[in-house]
Image (cartoon, rainbow, N blue to C red; front, side, top):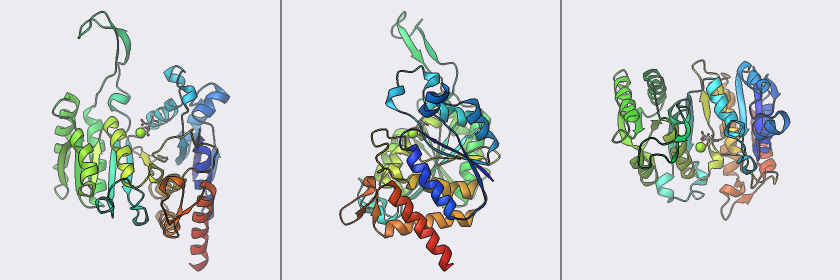
Length: 362
Ligand code: IPM
Ligand code: MG
């Protein structure tokens, strides 16, 4: 087993270091190789996704990714910005299926900005299509408008598009995931306005016929955004396009108390995957040792489960995380009165200790 480790920028290096220590504590045999990505790679090699990094990612069984980005790169031309690294990896590895589970751990009900009764016991799964939609649709660019409200003016444009196979395969992923859960899929679209999403809705409905045991409903994205904060527990699996999924998954993160708790998995058709926290590089707190490493640690658990075929090891990480939360340990983002505030390293230490202890006692 080979894991490509791409810590990236900002808090990426701190949180990935903790996830690696947790993986090492499991005593599994795997090889890791670390490479630069994002702004760090731009500084060293002049490109956010150097050929060597991409090659390593392609050859590995799984990629453990931190985060990329920093405001200081905002002025660079788009193709050199750190975000292009993650978009390039998704595209080049064909990572079309993005899993973003939003689970509210019992101990964190008070960390959320929502009322405890709305989120206690929450366990939903957002499945975001990750290689299509307006994120990758061509053509895109800037030009002089020939029509529209202001002919002759400068304008910018992107293209929202989905092909039938792209929608079919993500729909299958969603229905299959729902079969292992509460057997409900909500497909989120904007079919009332967008041709692309009427098409999406039609195809998801067709695919749904192959899964008569799974209940399917459809929701417009604006309503879904509202329902997510109104009655989030009504959802089981939410499947949606790349852009709506980007937005709704950040919203869902707040239901769990903090985006610092949200892991993710991005898989291709051969179950090769990239695992990253759903949050960004947080340059404002980088280097301070205060970032929450749990989303990355939980992403490592997803990696063991989905790409490395080690479900027991994944369970051990997840129970260790529950254990440290039950001990009352909290990084600043999930801290509340009566709990113990710890830094990134101490949180990692506590998870490692919980795992090691379990090993000794069997
Ligand atoms: C995410 C991030 C990325 C996205 C950015 C960093 C390109 O927000 O993974 O949700 O928009 O997909
Ligand atoms: Mg996002």
